[in-house]
Length: 214
Image 1 (cartoon, helix red, strand yellow):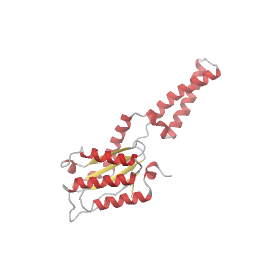
Image 2: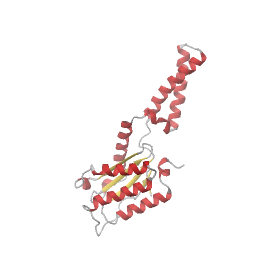
Image 3: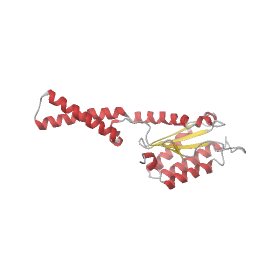
Image 4: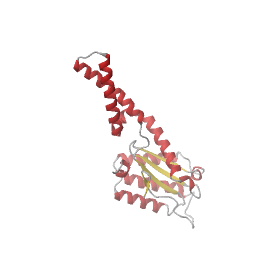
């Protein structure tokens, strides 16, 4: 079954993005890896919070309809509603969104981007020149992280503008094009400091979708 990450880009967009990365890396020793994840976290607290709030509301409404003011009836209605709604929210992630704060999503995406940076070996390149463009589809969020070799010469804040442009393109329905433009911009930023070397090799995958290298 296809995940959110696998449907985020069409097959043609995936192929174009891989080609874009390869073309950019012909000019730089940097390694740019777009990573697309369905989500950065499963947010179990949101399921419980949503189940609690919706369970209370449902129990009150049902008790009023039944004209029952008994505490034990209300408790039974609440427990049944809580279990129903919490499981429903867990099964359908889109329903959790109202119960997740923007701050919580931002923190989880930041942590997931850093985790993926290490999981996929971007810290192991020869010259410490790995760059991850991390897209978390559920949170509609983008993060860019660069390794120490790049950060020693390029202000990490420069990636904020690239993130903003990619995010703008995704919101406009141009996900594939926006990511290609982001890859090209990253390449332009680092090529001056890290031009291609005669013995350069392609050290990392050119696209990773939900942990699968393409």
